[in-house]
Image (cartoon, rainbow, N blue to C red):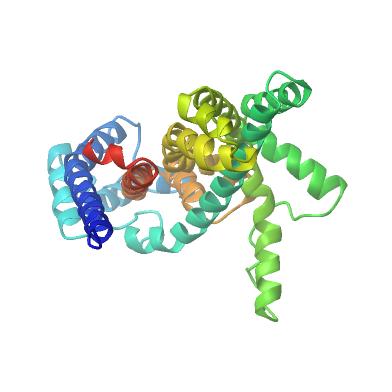
Length: 338
């Protein structure tokens, strides 16, 4: 009997490793399909990087544009361009950005940390606030706090993120003057200490993170309320209440843990998809991340950068989904067999 618990933990660990390996293998054809589809769709977009650069200069000749297309391989047939891109990708080479004239991997590597930080902070705010709001709605179900919280969550869900961003700037930057309206505060600034640097980063990140998070708060709140109301009616919850378990522990150990499975499933999907919202938010706040880079790449027809960003976003979605699967396996070990 002494070896029973270590043996069970070992089996669970092996199951988790098998789960991760299976998800990674399943993801390989998915990523390949995403790359091919994105490449084909971008070829339907009118113009290319040479046209965009010619439009910016206003004086490019036909010979100059032909030289640019030849330099970046834009004059090749589409299938040959696709084969070259896949060959380079097999060697972990994302190509060269015609607009910035540097490697796409370097460009993405410079912008990725800012976007990941913004997405992580926004996700923590949205998930925590939505979870607490949903728990409040469950405790006071069909009463005034439930109705008020439901109205607030619906309001957050209904307002577009760009409008939230503009209103937050008007309120906290223009009228109150509490927070900066954009940027990161790091350009040309000489930090005088770690604490000052952290506080400055928090000040500049507050409005972008809130703009990205508020739209998701209402979703998580309503999902949490629905899941907890369903779990609360289960027999094992009524049994725990009949045994005299404190209400706090009933909610925390029995109701919330099981209600987290559907909530975290949707949250995982949103975390991977936050990059789409980051395009708008980062553009409004001049946040130097992948979102603003994607907007610049669209304007400049920089397809190599766009393909790199789309590939990176798909990898983020895959990693997040694997993490959600592991979390579900921890919340409910019976899901390991799935």
